[in-house]
Length: 131
Image (cartoon, rainbow, N blue to C red; front, side, top):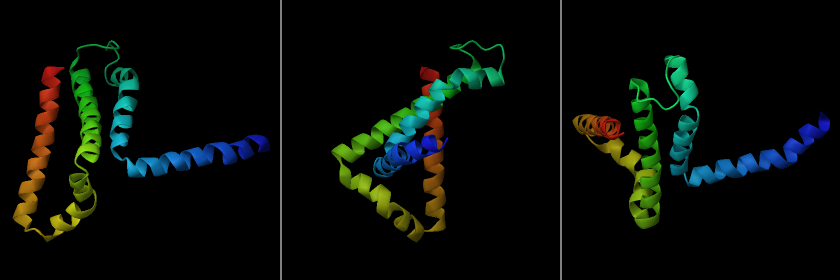
């Protein structure tokens, strides 16, 4: 047992730390990882909700689950493209947007937050209709 603990401390922990630091820089990959995790566990999740659901059924829950998976996947791809093609906007969203958001008026915060919420809602509904 001590050999296993020592092996994990010398081999696994540095890999996990490296992966964590890598995901700090490329946070966009986390949404792709969430999408892949949801997709891999979708059959189990759907059967928990509906025991009669098939693995890849056109059921009600599966359509929305795949729409959310698609949203996470596309979010990760778009943020990666932003970072590679137009790094200035990505840097602004990562570092300066929160400061600018604090300085705007409350009605502007409400308007922006509501717009972002309904944009995400629209995208999920649109993806659910396409899938």
